[in-house]
Length: 185
Image (cartoon, rainbow, N blue to C red):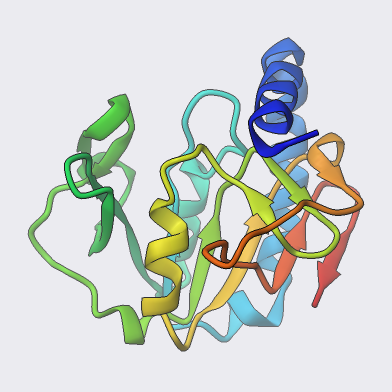
């Protein structure tokens, strides 16, 4: 299957799953994520704000803030397809942004080189640490700027496949966390 077919297939599978089941899987994934040294040792963590049936990151914001981490999240410019990280104070400081996704107010820009971890979304991840996102390339353009960051992909186990084909523009993650396993590159 090509990227478009894989994206469609796995988004469809996510939509078919009961919300309660996805929430339970999300809790297991976040628990495994929080046990990682990359998160424990991080000062600044960038995370996506979950939308639709993605691994739910909403509670993660306040958990990281309570652990004295700097937390930032993306703001997407739909004209340039560029993404910028801005600090957030907590879940309640988010506003509705591009694509109807919650995002920070673009007030306190994070320096990409200060980010220790980037929590990366995706439709499907491969055990080769490649991912298929949503087709706009926001993360593929952003991740090279976060030179010091460990890139961690969160996905449900049923969205993890043996391999995902990648091209020269695609960025890989360093770690993949599912509710059943943690894969480290």
